Amino acid sequence: MDEHGREAQSVARFNQWAPSYDDDGVQRIFAPLHRTTLDWVATLTTEPASLLDVGCGTGALLETAASRLPGARLVGADPAEQMARIARRRLPVGAQVVCAGADPLPFADGTFAVVVSTMAFNFWPRPVEGLREAARVLAPGGLLVIADLFAVGWLRPVAPMVGAGNRPRSRPAMGRLLADAGLRVVGWRAVSRRGPVPILHAVAATRR
Image 1 (tube, one colour):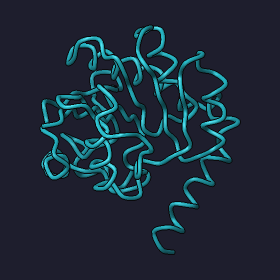
Image 2 (cartoon, rainbow, N blue to C red):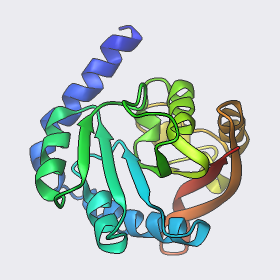
Image 3 (tube, helix red, strand yellow):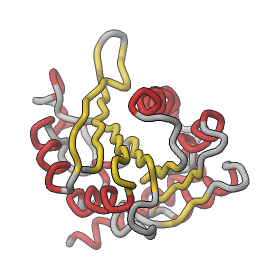
Image 4 (cartoon, rainbow, N blue to C red):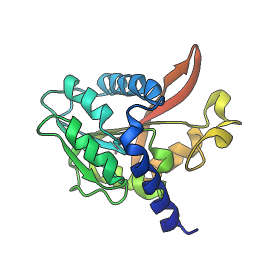
């Protein structure tokens, strides 16, 4: 199967999952992940005027962001129309959700102060192009935060065997991808733990 076929298959799977997505057990992981990711965003930047969630799913992170950033423009993008449809219903008036993947993003250059993506990067069919698009739509000095399964620490030998989608990247590999997209890494953080053991990590980068 070629790249386009795999991408269509992935979108179809998420469209099928959409009606039960918010009731699935994964939400027990995603809800605290969203909060922790937004907590980190708050420490890295002043209150942003705009935030884009790439791979927004049913809009759960954006719903949390709405309560924290009441004056911000909130936008979500997801390639699965059924996910995007649910997100539109749950989000407050003024929030926008488009049916689009990570590349191309249907927004003008320099549109957003913050771009986030949680548990979606490893499903981007073209990660290099997606990171370049994220950099393009960021305002100068804007912040990108990606939270996902990475091959970091004790996860280095096992992440490729348990991760879904693309092969999870190591810190050096992710750093190179971000640098190639015109982004500068400003830090890494564990954003999901099982007891004291870190499971999911996030990387933050700014547009140079």
